[in-house]
Length: 339
Image 1 (cartoon, rainbow, N blue to C red):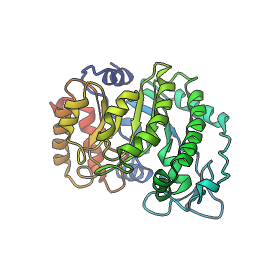
Image 2: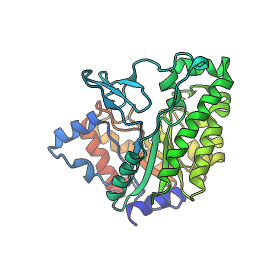
Image 3: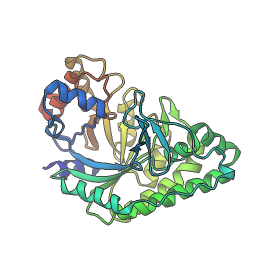
Image 4: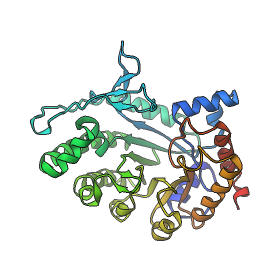
């Protein structure tokens, strides 16, 4: 089986060996690995089975303000801190939703098409998908401020729902463009969880987020394609909701948060889990030998019966020793050692 076929088998809950695997990097972490190995092309040698890009609004560095980036929505991101890949919002663009006259930008659809076409030109035998990051809750808080979004959920729910509908309509136009192309699936990124449950609680998620994500998923499902969803944190309360609206694969699957054996028992026939190797409690702190044992443990729980993409739980961060990155890659590429 080639790499795409292994991912399709995982999404169909068909057991295969080796299971598909993947590794993403922050810019800083990849820089550390390249420096350590002396190999500028090391990332391409790790056998990743997934191939995708994400639309973030193309943040562009502001002339004369090093480390500050403005995206297509007008949001300014400060990347001078630890997070140099995304950054922190400098200040909300919309301080008062009820008095706002904010106009969503016209997307550069020609650029979007070029990006998709460039991705497809380099797909090889990998499972290839288009991704949309900051596609609902995150786009709302990047424009309004996170505290304000929570305030509006309680105090001005109708105004917030109207705003979220505008976000949804904006992204649906982009999703439709992506679905014109020969992609294998669609990936959505929108963080809802914290270490113990949802940031906004399940009731607010079901009112404000679920109906709009359902519209995204339905558009993808109408094309017969799988939906892969990223959300950091503990989202177990809404796994049944996500299954109901059509999610096929959940990422990131964090063993420091979830009882992975119990989640596999409850949802393993309906969801494919992508992740399992902790970037919090394993990769930064374990020795390479300890890490291999941890990967073997996770693999032994999640690989049987299919429905598993072996991966770190997030893009690799710069606090992870390059030795551990390579130990993980070795385990992924030589799964016969995992049992």
